Amino acid sequence: MTVLLLDARWPTLIPLQAVGRLSGPVSFTDEVPISVRWDFDTLLVDGTEGVLVSTNEQDPQVQKLVKAGHVVISAASRVDPVGEAVEVMARAYSVGEWEASQTHRSLLPYLAEEAEEFAEAVGDWEQDGDDQALLSELGDLLLQVLFHAEIASRRGAFDFGDVAGSFVDKLRVRSPYLFDGTTSQVPIEEQERLWEVGKAQSKTRDV
Image 1: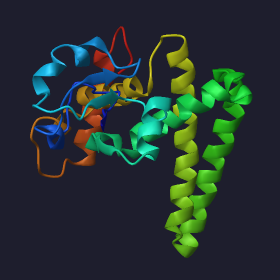
Image 2: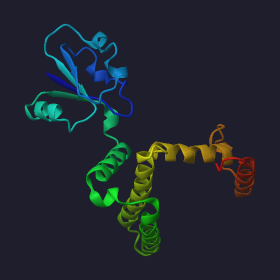
Image 3: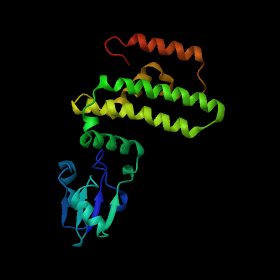
Image 4: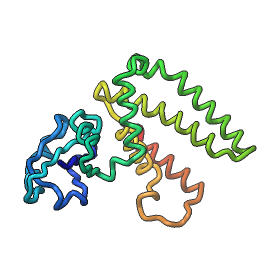
């Protein structure tokens, strides 16, 4: 039996190393979407080894096969610190009573505290060049962004990916030179002018 672990964000992207190595019968863990199951048989080659397709490495069926030493083929995109951070935050919210009790408002003191600690780390870095402290404090700030995004996703408003998209959308409007092929350094005066022009164009939505 082969275990095929797909990325839950892009489950229809089949790893290249799986091509020609999968044989039936095929089974899926419950969360695998129909878009993956549809026509999956066309990927199978002759043989009776069998394949279990999943996006959840914690699924009991997956765990059982992994512990038994079966072959595992995993999408390369699963080894992604950003994706893992989002997953860990979602898991923390699901199983942690404290996390599940938080709101955007209740988290504000922690955001202010982490921002202050990062400012202190910058001051220390200027004295001793401790990059690890900067990294650690930025991780704490990222936690706050992940936390707020997870709270929003639970009510169906937006998720971390939407937050990242919002960042890119804002720069696309206010810093167009980042998207038009410009390679020379843009003067500060031009950057400020374009930022204000883009800001003024945002009439119904702040981008």
